Image (cartoon, rainbow, N blue to C red; front, side):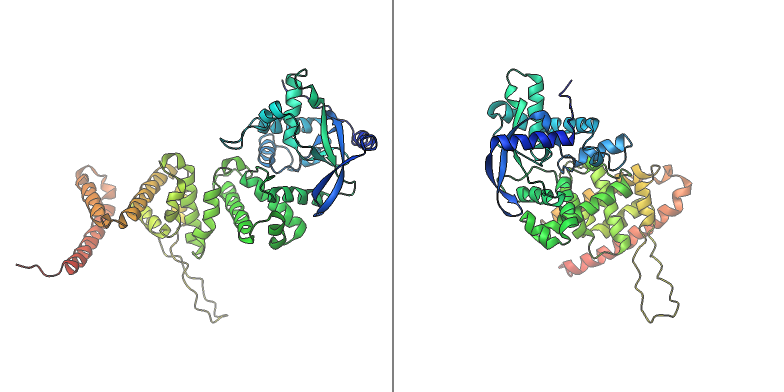
Length: 434
């Protein structure tokens, strides 16, 4: 059992707040409304005179998860701000967050409230919608419910009241201003940050202004938006879990790195590079090291990785056909490179995914190890030693006759490569001295 919302009407809340302002006549300085110093009314209100704001970037993921899980309309929370049951759902999300530390060194808000009580006033609209301090309000309500005697002080809450003409866009600007200050920066996850950026773009229409509002570099804003685009692609096209941002909330580094790792590649290679990254992300618990270390496998070495995986799976990669020239343009069309679609499908298809992914992991680990050993100059010897050891384990007699033709083809390629490598080695060693 937790605190239960009892919703007062908007008109009743407005009347109560106006009466409190008239009775208090106190003000506090506030510098983040319309980018200027403003004297805002300071009042103490019953906690049940306040409602949670639903356009909350901190609770965005939890709201999306609920909407998807319960098959609710996309605007369920936004249109339900004046609905008691939706306010109750928002309370439960916020109460959970109030008990959660942001990091190992950050004390949960509810613990701070237990010891220090309310240190800063909440910021509210003239109708009692909480603009800043939703999580603190949830924590205070929970403590009041759990122990009314000890925490009776939370029956009333200190608030600053915004003017009646404050618009929804200006309220988002206030949030951006708070996010820009190191001392008041809000502890969003990166998805929440992206939603705030996207919301600011709706209002201000250009990245330069958004960067200025958030006191960030334009490149940083672009990186966030590009990362969100990559995350959306993964959720929609690969995981088939569109909108389930909880799956990617801890993977900002991967989705931030992906755009630069596919930049400049053909469409086919870029898509296949993403398939490598997404497959690695899905199997990250098996990698035994940080996913970041594998960037080279879906970046500079992606084509090499794909060739090796296709070869190991006996799945020859064909060149993509050049566009047909109908004679209407005098253009020399370039080939788009290899067609990686069959390999991408092998990594996606439930029937082939396990084998293809395990093969991919083996190849990526090998590539990574080779990259590390290049600095020491021992990679060639180790690779040849490993190949020799693998060949010793081959039992042709036990093989399926249907595979003999493919085996013969692979052996001929090995023979050709071996001959070529020996020729290079002999040139490097020079003539033998007797």
